[in-house]
Image (cartoon, rainbow, N blue to C red):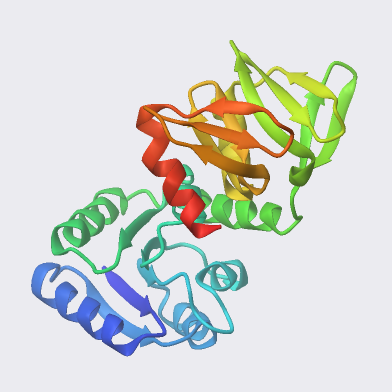
Length: 246
């Protein structure tokens, strides 16, 4: 299988190249690129089976490079040091990724998955991911299905969401409450990239409106509207990690 490495850090390209040479001899490295523009040319020229792609790069991010690709019949393995919203988006779209520093066993497994799937090229996987990125560029607008149509909101208009069986209640800054026929998990999949965090099996909160965290077994979050929301023990550390990034 042919491969291209795209990473703005030379030592990262060199390390990955050596790991591939030593542990994945089935992979033939045909190009190593330091930025998106040259990578686009290399992809068009070599038509690789795999692109090892960094996310955070100057001028053109890994996402921007994917959107600019005319040839998309390849598998993407993201190599990134940032375990943030992009990682969850990638997981949702079934694209492989490896967190830096790269573990050889994870690299071997990722290449094996590509090799296993190679006979049936799944072009739609990359195309679907590009479509997802395009939707993100529309901003923070979301559409809530209501009984008489759709309600268009900005994510900043939502205090928090509460599960009610197979439905979800949206508590809005306007004081209104909207009930939609989506589970909280389905809502979380849409809103987690827009600054929301699942702190409890029943609650998804807008991090921009967190005023105070009150310690406890799991603890509680005081929202800007005065509402106290419980934090479950198994969600506590994830929530605190999110707060550190604000």
